[in-house]
Length: 407
Ligand SMILES: Cc1ncc(COP(=O)(O)O)c(C=O)c1O
Image (tube, rainbow, N blue to C red; front, side, top):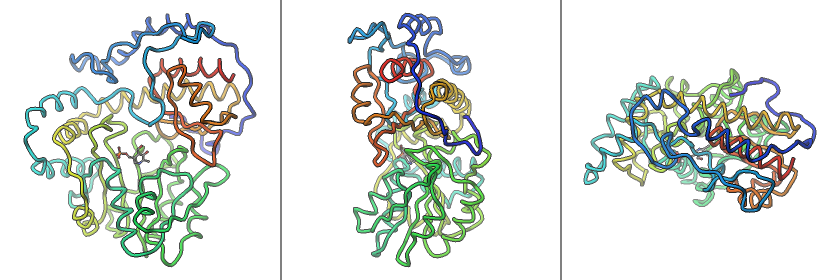
């Protein structure tokens, strides 16, 4: 991941126009590179073919644009750059585990809970009684929202941020106090501290944030969490933790490990492990708080998700591969934005945030005509686009298309 402390927010001028590469270039490059079979590490892991969206899926075929636009090659299916998903899919170990788990579909998963907490606890150097396993980290986020809204009161969140926790707390009766990001488009801790009221039950920090992939500086966040959690919950969502390569960032897991009572950290198997569709996520909190979360959860995990996550967290090779590919995709995409003078946020995750200069609903529609689906509008940033990283060649196709439409 690109890491330029102090220049996270590229202060660049408006975009300059670029020449359009012909579609022929894209087409030959993609076939020459054997498009989706890029990793020897992954290929060496064995054979499992033809599962869409995995490293082993068949190459998408490219054809001339249906719109006949000067030979820009277009894939034969929509490329998802809209939901921060992992374009490589689950690891081969996870795929094997899923396959085997089909035979266990008659079983409840309680018997795997201990094994899961031991594994995740071991990887994070924290005892299993701190861990809750949810149907995606979204379930744990909602538990945070629920705990905050059980007595009347408010929560404080950045604006914009990931909405699952604030929406759930709001729907259950909390007042949601939204604090705009600062002029570097970072979560504004000082303004959030000032926005806290006597009745504030929880402060939510998404780090890296989503939809804007900035981080909160580690020392400032630690001080903030220690201070604010004296009287209320501090919920730190680290869904993109594994993608961050920035010395200014740190997980706050040590605060939970050290016994602080009002701090919850969330992580997920959806992102770097590519298991979003199987719904596995984790929270880490003081054992008393973890027990309360466990008592209130409504979802249960399914056997395929549990088996897949167990296998995936034991297999670090796939995560390293995904990380390398994500960096390559970001280099291609953000490299273009930089060269073209297009303002964007240097990503700390698997997506970037870029100023298009056009209403994003219109940009979405035009890109979709080229089989590229990008993120929804995030008001008040109506001209900004959240762009999730797909595979490197898919990002090359994006760059060519974007240049053609807006360059
Ligand atoms: C910041 C953040 N937190 C949590 C989630 C939810 O992830 P899941 O419920 O799949 O674990 C997402 C999903 O996009 C996210 O961006």
